[in-house]
Length: 510
Image: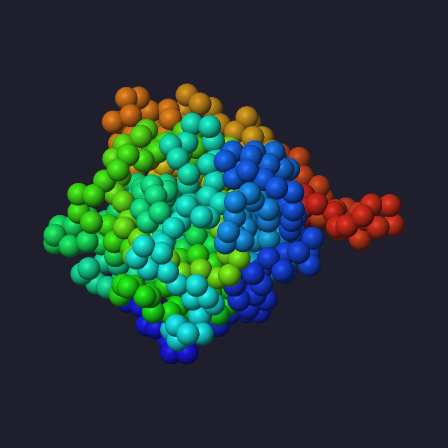
């Protein structure tokens, strides 16, 4: 295999953690099954609403396993569907990245930061050895309607083949290959609608090609491994390669191969891949789709359509379907909250903000998009206001986020009980709230009317810290004495309790 050097890629520092113990989705599923993290649904299921209803109800439990649906009526390709792939499972997130599944959320955020600083360039492998080329169809042989494509919600505009997908596009000026996760509605045997939100790289690439009067090449993978899915859904810089980032996440290069009809590479170990073209002006009605907000997003409108030129599949392929729903049943859950928090911390490091103890984008707040908590050690007058403003507009945090809450360093930002305590005892709304207006929002925000306002939003900056001017006079909070805590922790098993004692937060010395 030859190494593929994508623009702006680099190899980061050596990885301390061992590479993840899988190479593709099938090996990852086998590993999940060994760890009790997979449930096979062998009973026949209707992909129209029934599959999503099962997923939604089972995933109300945050510890729900991944679900592999194996039995569909009229399924000539023997295809299967995987849902709740990562969801809100810390265990499957850790398994994907080769981390300790017993780590706390804070520890997983910090470990993820280390992995995200590295880059491992993808490699090219020969088409004849690529598993995705078990079946290759072109022209009139392409028929995507033979796959068990879900309709998730009663009000969805159609069948959605692309929710748990990754999509490749290319910047015509730099050659950078972007990997994004964009919703895709089936229009027929060889036509797929592609919706990209304003400001997203996939849309910018498309518009750049169309401005030259040329079609935009697209590669979409619908059965994809979780590391590539994560990299495609996380915010990276415009000229950064998500392919390099995905390699670093799992500790090995992403394997790519040549396509059958286009110039873009395709993921060699994916389950289902299409190559296609977005032609200038070819649009069809698309949407709505039940989204991560828990509401239907983006009313029905004309959106670009991929003309599918080639279809690649493994035998008995697995379609990855990501249910978008209100927490905790949303595929975009804890994994995204951890990854987004890591990216925000890196952004704050780059601008040099001191005293940051931690950041967490809570998954219950619109899948990690709606609210961010930042914990700091106050060092100077105005430090809290600075932290709030920088966090609100950090590249990884700017999209959609409405609530940014600053708390002191004795408050665990990942613990909502701690955060609510700080909000209730250290925040005086008349003095401690500020608003940023005309910020970057999303067309999926149901709180904005009329809908034309939705590209713009606002952000509330909430100071839930002790007032800097009165730190010495502020009432002292109750804390366990360190010596007593350590004595109790050492006797935890003797006292008849299982596991390890929970973290008490800050301790009083002595």
